[in-house]
Length: 508
Ligand code: UN1
Image (tube, rainbow, N blue to C red; front, side, top):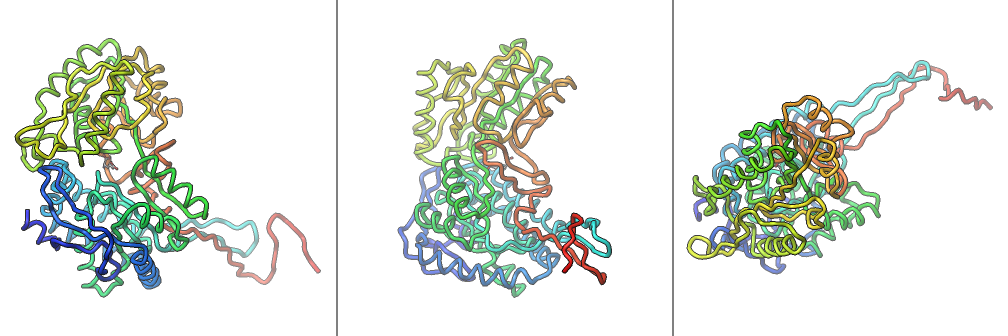
């Protein structure tokens, strides 16, 4: 463990703010404790309000330089960052696992997601296209161009401590923005490690290092400073709906922009012709992967009555074989939850479920004893549920899966959409009509809708995000970059007359 920390530049005691150099932060210390075994990884002194002021001032200065570097040159820097990430993939993936508790294959996958978005951003740096239009006025030209936006804030969550930052950061970087990253206080060390990797590249290239700034601190001080500050043009935040409502209100009030990627309540519809083998794999990865702590985790399976008993019994036997334990062991499929408060939420949800009439099919225990001393390990749980149970409306960030019987596609779609969130969704069927219906405007109301693959594990190439209480933001691929730039429409008169649009006459 110590070797990994040393390789990534993590000390016993770390600063909680970077803006070209590490500041001497003096805020209350936080301890990064591994949920695997309760071991202290390292400490961080949190940033305070005055540190935030220093960071934003430096980020603003960096932006003024960075925006003048041609976009393909900015892409070249991101290319080098991608190469560094490849070199550090093993250590960083392990640190993600140590600090967050996801299994190593997923920890490494998260770093791969960073590398993928770096590659995407490099190409994008030569493709920040605007349109040209034909002017209605003679001898005039019209076009639009995209300019860097400014300094942006990135608030990330513990469950994807590095990948989601990269989706935002690498796109924002080629777009010419400077950024201030506020990682979750539950996973500060991965933030520090990534900042160390990126800074080396910036320094080697003589680039302003505060382009990639970092603040680690409390939501009530640093988070509030970040969202309230008019110098922060865009706040891109991943986290709970509660947090999103606060950010939306504050940033909206000052007419800033937001990209919100909040809760999900993702469902898989399994129709009567479901390929059981595929569905089983997708449901297991979606519901048990990352211990149910992805915003894309599968929370509900809506199963056609004709295959209900068969699929439930297959799921039950698959659940009984899941190896829960140290996520660094290659035969383990499910590690711990992030901390004991997450376990308390899991336990609380299970109590509510039973009170409301849901039936536990398997799981539901918090594990204790040898190998589970940290108190963060729980069993993945299957619940037989009716669509009406109030708890089904909530996202419980834990491996609890509701199984609901449906009779036909229309009923399935209705139940599917009858939740406040709208992130990811999937249908299993080989029936063209079912699939098309699900993907149509009659169908899934989510930002992501899949056929014969699960709800989680999206690739970076598409725009990622969702509707309704999920917040409406889009990050990563496709044209999500546009949110990180400002659009300017330009009209140029290259003639000797001054005609007005819409045929208006205004001659003196
Ligand atoms: C998240 O949980 O916030 O689609 C992001 C997925 C991952 C990203 C999840 N690529 O599951």
